[in-house]
Length: 188
Image (tube, rainbow, N blue to C red; front, side, top):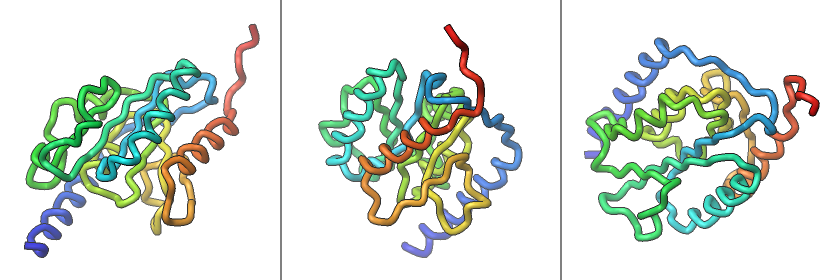
């Protein structure tokens, strides 16, 4: 059974890499002051981490930045704390196709929405989340560096020692996003 799963994953990764060849995304980022919407792609297998994401959501709301969170939960039914939250959408295992790609219409909506920033919190490199992160039309993407940074879909690569704390990771991402100022700001 494990061999069959690995073959499906390998086929899925191959199909994703072929689809990426046709993708045409324009990278743009000037400063944190111009960011209005953020997408967080998150491995939701640890429900206890959701409180940290909720705190981050509230901090961003204070800055007038809208945050959407798209998670992947490996079970068939969601934990109670994941339900009825308007800024959180969760993909479950039974909502994936044969190649582990999400088949929900919401997944395609997240891919096609031109978010200002995408923050990838997929430390285990789960294929359903890689699919979203890599195909997303977000203008700027932040994620963890891996063994092949030249093949990374991310514009900002974070190199953080493991085990990675979500709270520390988000703090570091925001720190570097605040440091980047590639354009001139309008003076009032």
